[in-house]
Length: 282
Image (cartoon, rainbow, N blue to C red; front, side):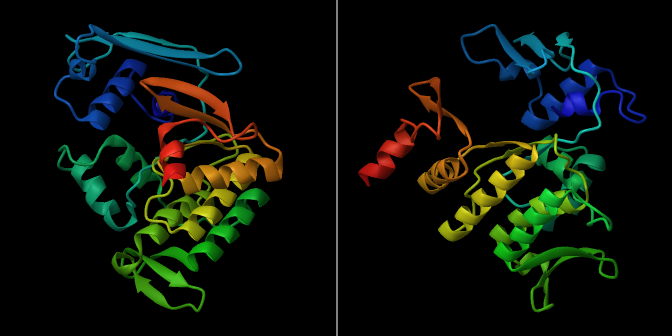
C-alpha cells in the first residue's frame, strides 16, 4: 500500500519497482531479498486486488538481491495515506527512528516505523470530519488527555484533563500508543479512504481500555476507514463480536488453523481457532 501511495507523488524520483524493493529491503532488513523466500521453495509471490478490479502483484526468487523485476500494477495514483501502527509506541523515540534511517542508514527500526514517524505531526487547526472529531473525543476521554508538541522544548508532552503536563517518557505505553491514532486523525494524515493496520491491538492496554479502543475502531470503520488488526486476545475478539451484533455490522475474521487461513464473520458467531478454544478452556 505504501508503494502505491508513494509512486509518482510529489517529487518522488524512484520507479515503482525501486519503491517496492526499498520498502521490502528496509522493512525486513535482509541483505538479499531472496532470503525472504520460504525454505524449500524457489520463489515468493504476492497479489492484491481492489473491489474495482485493480491489481498489484509481484514475484521474486531466491537469487533476487536488491531489485524486484516481476511487478504488475494497475492501481491508480492516490493522495490517500495509509499507515501501520506497531505493537510498540514510537512517540517517545520518533527522533531516534528518523535519525537511524535518514542519517545513519542502518538497520534497527523497520520501514513501517519510519513511515509512521514521518506521519506524526502536530494537530492541525480547522475543521475535520465529524466522525474523526467524535473519535478523537472518545480517545481523549479514554486516555484522560492528549499528546501535544511543545515548541519550546522541541518534544512531545502529555497534557491531562486538568491541564497538568507530563514528559512523554514517563507517560504510560498504552496512552502513547492510543495517542498515535489521535495524532493521525488530528493532523489530517488519515482520510475516510485510508487503510489502517494495527499490530497486536491489545498491547499495553487493560481490559476496559481494550473495550473502549474497539468501540473507537468501529466508529472509524463506520466513517469509511478500512481497518485491519492482528490480535492474540480473547478480550478483543469478544468485544468485536458484541459490537458486530450491537451495530448489526459485518466484521470479517481470518484465523490461522493448522497452517491455513479460515474466514468467518463475527456477526455469524465467534471464530473457531486455537486462541478462542484455549481461552475458553482456561
